[in-house]
Image (cartoon, rainbow, N blue to C red):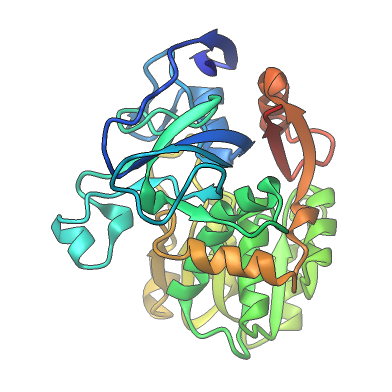
Length: 346
């Protein structure tokens, strides 16, 4: 089969390798139809690492995907060849203390698609996944829409871990796919006011389409001052979705006493965050890190199928598999108003 390997910094190469086979009776062979280019994939592409996770070249990245069931193991009960599935990229053991506590996303033996040292990614014509990671999708849902369920599930989980949204006033700093996913989940759960910032105006326009109450570009105006003018009592929660130090400092200045910072963005180069201790302590600000998602993919798929929000708007670019490098270059350079780029097979 063909697979697209990361062979160096900013270098992807198409290679021929043996197709995978089902070795576990509970596994499923899936033929890839769509793969989304995620910001974390681009970190590996651009720097070869995310924190302590360092790529050993060559390595296939990619974890947002959907496809067709090609073959099933003898113990698979819920799927059959021809079924259309979205993929949950986290493969947990189910028996460690974290899994038993309902924290499969921090499983002691977690294997995640496209994560160095854990599992090869989905930029291949075929992958093998456990049955529980393959979620059937309705016929009316496109494969591209199914792929959106992965970042959307992170947004659903982040909102779930924050605070009750009914009547809440929040800010989302960063309006890429994760920021838009948080925006969608918060809006559907009844947030009263949603302030969104980004340094790319095209993404702010997208946020308006997804229902943002207000948008602002921190490179063009004092977004903190403007939001504080609108909300003198300040905000209940701020979702940091861009992995930028300046955004974290803005979050602190936007929160009311007892407010909550939700850190979702992955810093491209930072090993440490700087926080103003005096403001954090005096206002008793809470910080909650978000690590991917847990048991929220079904909810995300239901949101997409419900069509209360048209998530197809998030998909701004499509590329054939053979032009994967072009897709990564586009996303890495924030070119042409890109929000979500999809790689399509066949």
